[in-house]
Picture (cartoon, helix red, strand yellow):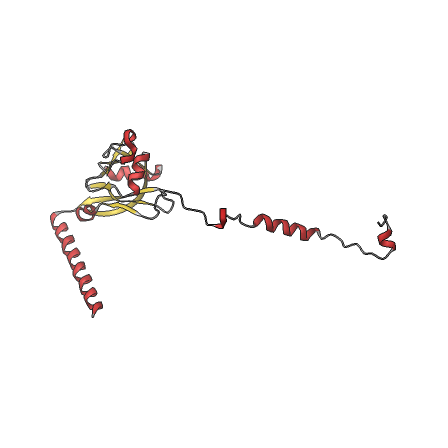
Length: 202
């Protein structure tokens, strides 16, 4: 066994410790992603809300109204309602938006009951609060009370974060001749689509 100081006397060189190298190696280990169990990728959560998916559309709105501007709103929901929406159980055909006591409400939208909820189920056609920032709320309130204008729900959908949103439009009711013109335009578009499809098959 060598005594202290023998290394230098006998020509044995000491290798200096590279502290920078040790620091870099330790950082590299920390930044490496942790493997999942058995090396398998993490599973998606069960019953996760589909993102970017349309739940329901109000097809009558575009026929009956002239749409002036649109606004995305949040929606206050019960747990059983969210589960029903995930499987598309919503109708907006008879729904409308009401400005009442300084708040915005979605009225008569039909969200079917969720069978598994049992006693904790919801009223399918209950009035539901729409969420919008104060500035937009005040602006919509003014327009909702203007002569000839109304607020209509156009579409309900899950956004990119899986949150339910409702697209609301400031609209003006169409007159009979306007509705007829809309039908003519729709029929013209259908004929053009048919002709293009038929041409593509040749």
